[in-house]
Every structure is written in C-alpha cells, then in structure tokens.
Amino acid sequence: MNGPQDLGGQMGFGPVAPEPDEPLFHAGWEPRVLGLTLACAALGHWGIDESRHARESIPPADYLRFSYYRIWFTALCALLERHGEVVPEELALAKVLAPPRRAERCLPAERVPAVLAAGGPTERAVDRPARFAVGDTVRARVMHPKGHTRLPRYVRGAVGRVGAVHGAHVFPDAAAHGQGEAPEWLYTVAFAGADLWGPEAEPGLVVSVDAWEPYLERA
Image 1 (spheres, one colour):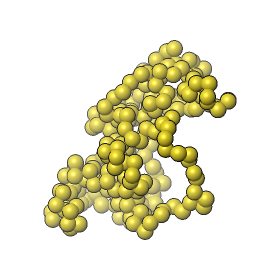
Image 2 (tube, helix red, strand yellow):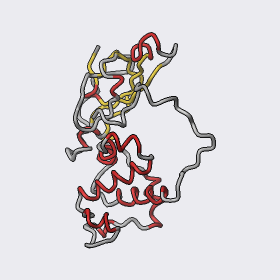
Image 3 (cartoon, one colour):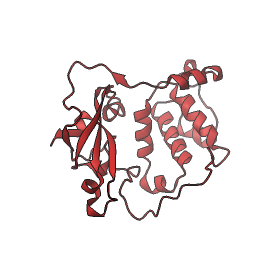
Image 4 (cartoon, rainbow, N blue to C red):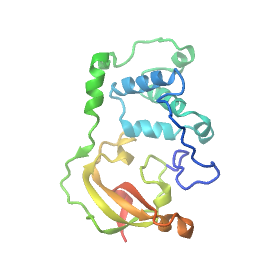
C-alpha cells in the first residue's frame, strides 16, 4: 500500500540526521514494547508480513508523529484485538478481563535466545523455474495495491537489471492478508539512480531492491 511508511524519494521532511552514539532505546518503556512484540508473535496468530502491514495501516497523521516504538505498540494492540487476544476494554483499563486464547503458546524466558537465534526462514520449494536470470533487464510493474507490498513506490515503472536470484520465498503480499505463503521467486534488482530520480540524481548512484517475481516484467 502507498502508506506513510513508503517515504523513498519524498521531499519536505528535511535532511536525514544520524544520531551520534545512538542508544538502542530512547525511553525506558521501549525495551518492554520490543519484548511484548516478540512474545506476542510467539502466539502464532500472525507473521512478520501481517505485523508490517499493521504498522503501515496506522493513519498517516499518527504514523508520522509517532516514535518508532509507539508505532510498534499501536500495531501490536491492533493485532491482538484482531485475533481476539484482547478487547478494547482491556487495553483501556490495562487489565486482563478474560483468559488469553492461546495461553499454552507462552514463550518461556529461557527459550527466547534459541527462538531468536533460529529466526524465521522464508525460503520455500516451488515446482516452477525462475522466470528471470542474473543479467536480465526487467521493469518493475506499475501497481498501487491497497494491501501490503514490498515493492517501493519509487521503483515502479523503472527498468533495472537482475543482480541475484535468491530462490523462492514466502510472498508478503499474500501472507500479510492470511492468504497463505504463496511462495514466489525473489530477485535483487539494481536500478540506476538517474532512472529513478532523473538527471538530479547523485552521479553513479545505484539502488538495489529485493523484488518478488510478481513485481517484475521483462523489459
């Protein structure tokens, strides 16, 4: 979706100013939000794509004024409500009013390091060959889906070259909406900065994007 998260190439937000010696967290509540997010993911109701879409679905005016972890917390509340783990009254009161639906899926503290180390591999087997190969010239499709997509808006319609083929992976556009994993081939595509931003682009700039096969067509 063309939500507030897709800011590539947008103007008017001022320069990017990296914070020297940036701490991992800026407030004491932020580590708790990170922990809650990871623990609730272990319930198994949703995957990373649905959680990303929940963050993207925050109203733009709120998304742009919220801090990073307030965005995470707002999306987490929405996910917990959507999947029946909490009701609005519980969030308002900060109090449990009914037993959780999946209490048996509790992630014990001693298992956290192993679970995080295992990660969430997304590569899957498919019974069809890749449509593109390294060196092929492709065009990113012009598309404006209402749902989740990982194709940045600023590359849509631009021509690039396939730099790598990564195998088939869970397709975020389907997984984010409960439509199954629907694995698709995944590529790295390199775009010249001038093809994205015109003659005002930084000389020699190349932008590499990981793009699933449905995002691409042969140029």
